[in-house]
Length: 232
Image (cartoon, rainbow, N blue to C red):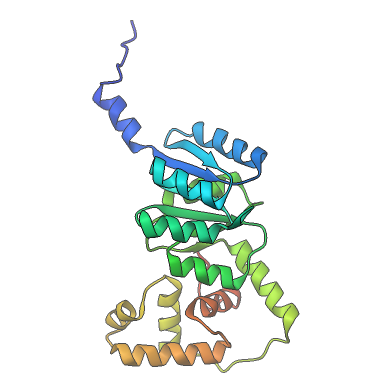
């Protein structure tokens, strides 16, 4: 005879506790319903609700307290990044994954600055989205390689690519640490140099790569093969 486990059984409670609670914010009803259905078929993921705008997304997140929010970049009443900023200002431990079909470098920079965990293509694989929801972590920032490639292609269309001087071994070391998401203080400590010296290397790297920010430098360097892409 097969033993029956009650809801109070410790093993059942452990399984329930391990589930990652996900809120879906997207105004495309079919997409949202398909994603919610997929979440509920995964033993370690659980949908807690959905919303279809910036305003309703913020309200739902504060009400439901999900672990992760998967949010469309384009919403009827504004950008998903506006919603993300509002959520993180009030619930800073929430992990947020942005989906977009039309990325812009400025959007990536803003997402990294406000604390978004990942930027993924909306037309990418479901498996990638689910895996990213499982592994999204505060302080990390994943940009899917396909978005890096698209941004690089747009950059080439806008202007002729300008050759840059070869980076020194120390500059490459700093660049690769930048690609891992470390800040200047941590990089300086890792390399055994002062923060001012590290900032000098960063300034030199930006100049050589023609970048205006550390994130843009990492995107350019990834395309050029100077640093490895972060795969999800």
